[in-house]
Length: 281
View 1 (tube, rainbow, N blue to C red):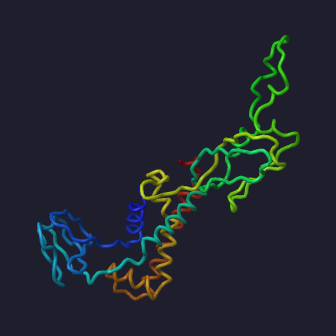
View 2 (cartoon, one colour; view 1 turned 30 degrees about the horizontal axis):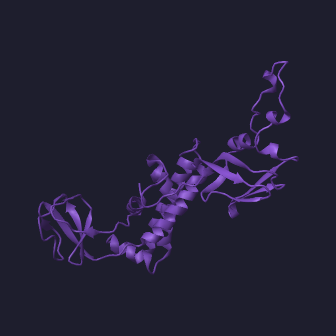
View 3 (cartoon, helix red, strand yellow; view 1 turned 120 degrees about the vertical axis):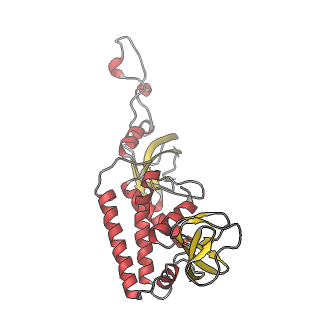
């Protein structure tokens, strides 16, 4: 899924779907909303729209080809903007990634005398097993397999970063600053290649969350989105009610949104936090 598809899926989950312009000779399903002539209409009988015109008027039961529409109201704006939803998705993916990160490889080019290095922007933590293998690689020559008549130098029995120092090397990671610090300063240059755990990301073309996990990855963001609507009585809640043609009082709608958010939060805890799983991605 790409960014646009994720936004649409997010809106569907919180029922903040934006009506699309009416189109001729198009199949519509029950519940779909369209815009036509400055008005919003909702499909109450599925079918295919006419070749031209589209629904008009403010009465129920408007026939359009084989589709039947009910007038909903004037054009209703969504409660959340695309920019807000994008941020909610990003926040949700970061929460999801703490329990289902993706595993990636990185190479840090260590330079003589330089102690501080920049970590990847999607960094969560290092894969300890892979990192330990990178800083303590096996020697290129196994001394246990040498014949009594083999002669090798000490340098051949050493390999990797540790061989470049006379004292013990310490690698410290600071995710908040996206930095790795080597102490003492390297005495030679080398490439340090190892795996790390990364946040899931998305953009206009791709999403790193496996398709089957997208719904779960969206949950933390959906919870935040529902609560943001429920607590904003003056603007978002009114737009949400108008878009869904809800006539119930504000307090009841807000309570229902909060209850739904609580349910989804428990679902995320049950399916992701409490359920053991291997690393995704």
